[in-house]
Image 1 (tube, rainbow, N blue to C red):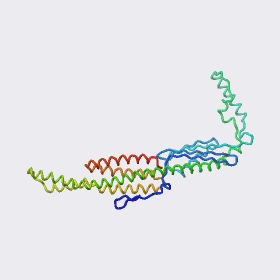
Image 2 (image 1 turned 90 degrees about the vertical axis):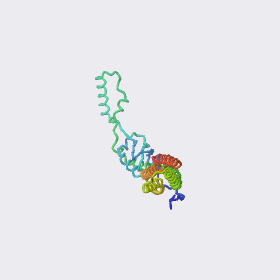
Image 3 (image 1 turned 45 degrees about the vertical axis):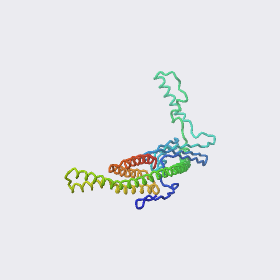
Image 4 (image 1 turned 60 degrees about the vertical axis):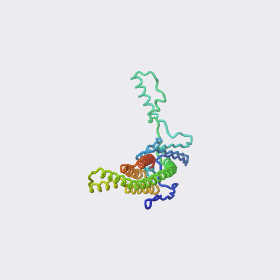
Length: 311
């Protein structure tokens, strides 16, 4: 959609290929390799900035920074939660061993505590399981290299699905925004036409009033009269505001079609469009124009709400 010579011309943008994306979405991927199955889920909602929360198994706790870096390379804004689950097929042996020395030491410690606090309850296995030191992890399974390679692949696949959903929703948002901006552009043209028609009417009304004053033998200051007429014409003329209004709507549609991560820029343009609408409303004393300005401001508020969903 382009604006030329002050008129709206319809163009069809390929909204299914639009660059804008919603901040809400979901992606899930499951990758199985070398007896390791990694499942990654990515969920996103609206946020002013990028905020990433991770839920990781203990083995991958040191990979939080790596995961966030990968997410930042694919997403610019939003509140994201990345959940990672890893399952391994064992060969019949447990990947950990009991540290008997640590277990005995904790039993003694708990019994001493029980006696000191005069607690009758006996020490049970579930109490010992609270202490991770009672288990030893063999050095050969302490490395997360194999698990991480599978998790990374699943993470990138989940992010691809997440972004696909966001792009699809972004295309629907773009269609809705185009429809609303089209209506605004058509309405401001109608306002401009009404404003131009009102100026001769106001001039005639003023001259009729002057004729009445002359009949009443009131002395008229010709210079003051010309000044008042000039001020009136300037107050009623909203051509400049309408031109700027159409310019902003044109850039708005171009930004939707051509800009990645356009949310902040679109919000800025809506502020400028709203400012022109306010000026038009303050310069008119026509009831029909005032009613149209109120409708425009309501539509701009709906657009602003929609933009809260765009990255």
